[in-house]
Image (cartoon, rainbow, N blue to C red):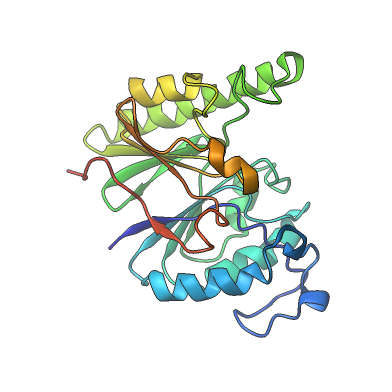
Length: 248
């Protein structure tokens, strides 16, 4: 059993679809071909089927669907649900349909779990998640607009980690964020502080695409294994999570 990760699938099916035979013009509302992701859903499918077994788990930290409404996002969830493995999903900045955690969970196929400001158990790990946000001092940071969201998101990660530590103190903790906890420009953040406080050794994140890949900070940073899992960065192939520790 292996824990994989891949984020930013950016699906946009407008009706129920199977894994194969998708018609780009009729079945997809927002094709990613304009970004160079030519029929990327086929590439995700093929790589996923080559890589992931039914007993494995795949973490998907954000930007799963372009849908604005939950009923639309269900088409994307159901497509992912046809792929092997258990799936753990958490929100990204484009998950506009995710206004209610309870309602999202009601729309997920069997074998899929949604976490946001809470955690779930995966292969002996307590996996905690929230969206994250832009970091103070980073490119594009706007103090007036971003500070409140940043602090709220840090608080949500604290809630998740506190619950995991209280209810499963023996479990190694792993964190899913959509935004990176540090960047090439910003070496410290409230998110990174929380990873240290709760002795998190592994964190996966997405959000960075294209030219932003060069801003990714990866490897063991301040004792935490950081791993960028945006699907275009991974050539649309789920990647095994580099676990800094193994579960007890």
